[in-house]
Image (cartoon, rainbow, N blue to C red; front, side, top):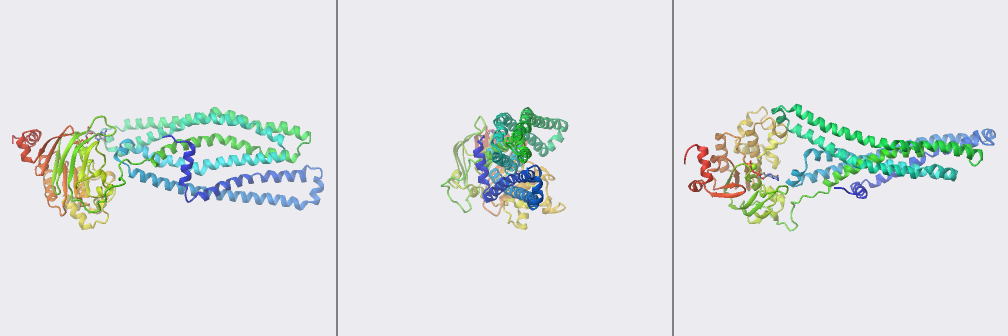
Length: 590
Ligand code: DGT
Ligand code: MG
């Protein structure tokens, strides 16, 4: 997404709400301290003309000695004043930029939190991390430094121009005659450097993604002894980034000699033209000294322009990325006329002719799925890997929307429900278990932080986790590492099951949740699932017949279609896919 500069600046302004006055004061302060720069040459000029080189210099030194002291003191006082203003402006602008950054960062995080699954399929974690760190810093730098530098450069130039004009307009015209050439050089530079910054930004995101994926996937790297390969891969990203950085810096080197030549022409011009003016008595010696001591005030902004332009382009590339997230909206949201269902659901789940295709996928994953799970029933879903089981259950909490047909709970289309109310009624243990680096207690009570310790233990018992937890040195207070490091696969699954149960959901969805636990433990879990002390419809994806056997209904899915459905006995009688599964798993003909 590319937005023009005006839009980006107005976005900054929007986010400065509450600090705008402070920022304007900061900018005015910048103008003030730059205007104050002119006081030194002004006083020097007066001192030189009155007391050093003027016609009456010697007499003035005797008769107007007090004025001399006054001028010197004024110079010192104004210098101290100027330094104070600079200090306050820096503090002020830093405060504004940090406040703004804090706000934008929070908005970004909120936006990312509320995004759909599709968003997470599209953006890589490393890229998102770059947006909330490096890119945001470029945005902060714009407010704290770049804008101020532009104001500084222009106010200094303007103040100097006014002062020069006040002294002698002809000499001024000579000095500023160079300006159009400078402008042309800078504009050319901008066009060249802008794509470089966009490239730089992409390379940084690539490097961060490589690092992030490696850190979180370190176990796989180690298992395959691919450290060297990964180091080399990272080295490539790193080199790419570094080379692009160098290229970006070199771009300025092409233009630098022109800028430098023009900037250095100024004193030469002054010497030649100013000398002539003095000879012709068109300016005084004091004025000449004032002119020459202000040359830097024109040279400096010129030299800074390259840097400013660089930072402008860096900001521009980063702001595109940040604003893309800032203005992103999830597609799956509450409808305006969403039905309000504050109470607990009865738990009837119905699929009516549901077909589904991933946005980024080519082929449909589910075809014409229809079934009903009555309140309190257990529905088991079976099918070979990749047949669409996970995709199917993800339609119930509305992680995705069906391309055709509808999913209903208690007779209401989930698309018409409020997301928070819908999801509050669903307990989901995902196939890919993700635990937080928190205590076991904190992980189980994730969905309901008010859960008492007693209840946490109860749910741990339901999921057959209580035993191994109590054996841990710190029991429920044991802190587990990132993504559940420190626990076995089966242990993680059981904690994830306890977490899903702990919200006492009306609909419990288990996606292969007991695949890694032993038969005995699984039996225990099944038993407690039948004995839950709250009403609950269960939708269970499983591969084992022992899990599905006692379900009220078993759905067999093949290539995204329900090919068989019924109870264990009915399906065996059918002698189809389920029957062959039973034969395979029990090792005998049934
Ligand atoms: P499993 O867990 O290995 O037993 O397999 P299922 O039955 O849970 O399969 P599922 O629903 O994860 O995937 C069904 C098909 O959809 C499979 O061909 C892969 C594809 N698929 C899954 N997730 C995504 C996704 O996020 N985007 C796209 N484009 N395709 C996906
Ligand atoms: Mg799956």
